[in-house]
Amino acid sequence: MDDGIKLQNLFQTLGDANRLRIIRILGDQSRSVSEVVEKSGLSQPLVSHHLRVLREQNILKTKREGPFIYYELSDVRLLDALGIISELHINISTKTRSRENMFSCGEQWMKFFNKK
Image (cartoon, rainbow, N blue to C red; front, top):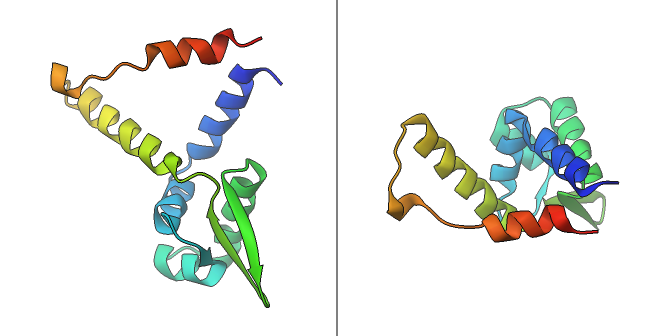
């Protein structure tokens, strides 16, 4: 699959407010479905659906302990990336642009799409 399509799929998966809430709840620790339900206020079927989608996209991984399945982020750097995107959104929304708020990742971005 083309890298651009893979990135599009990732952003589509992350483009749901409930999934972002679940990612925030998981943070850098493992949680069971019931813990996510309790902390999110979402129904158990809805949480299970979103956990499955996130797991299918390899955003989450699972581990079994006895009868319980625990979910955790596959890569906690996702929290940093979402933090950067949130800051960017705030800067765009408020039209705040300053050198202190700018960072350069253009080279990495271009490398991503120039892979063969």
